[in-house]
Length: 240
Image (tube, rainbow, N blue to C red; front, side, top):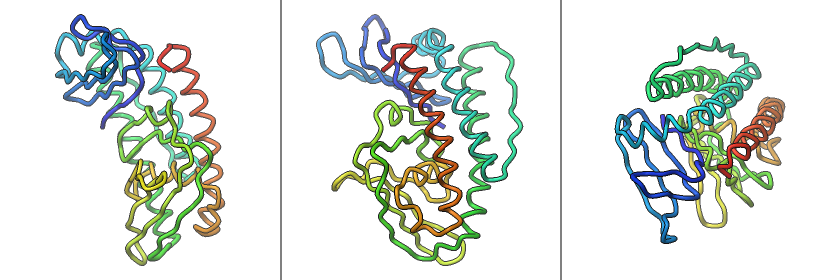
């Protein structure tokens, strides 16, 4: 799992990068931002390096608040599809290991919700289809696959069309993608929970059948509520 989020300004090796974004996995911390001369700079740091430790330690409260809200989002979506998730507590300790354990827990919550979503998809039997749905004015992509993509919450997709392409009868396989003009901005496996989050932001979801049309507005309510709270956290920490 990768954890992508805006970071505001960050000092990396003595250089301050502004308008930075960070991607954290269990092996690396990747930073991209605007350097002192106004050009974009990138840094790839090993997770246990001194610079990575400093970045994670300095932003641990920010990361924790974001993950608290993301866990809550996925747990609440789970309830809407009859998946009950027991949260796992982690004792505070080394900031790097604590963050990695939290990401692993979130990945597990996503897996459980994904299991429930796949059961629903297979019961709906969409068949082979290619459907284009008008998206909301702004489409917020909290997750892409099993990655957390808060860069697409801070900067949502505007004017997007949500496309559903399925390949098989019975057990559903296929993709969900968001297109703006000729550009595909996001593409995810339809069987991943991230596709449910994206589909919930379609305007004409009735074209997906009554079962999904009844479910997806409840998912959207959870997405809208938690996106507002995630954006509030980012504003409070000055990262957007």
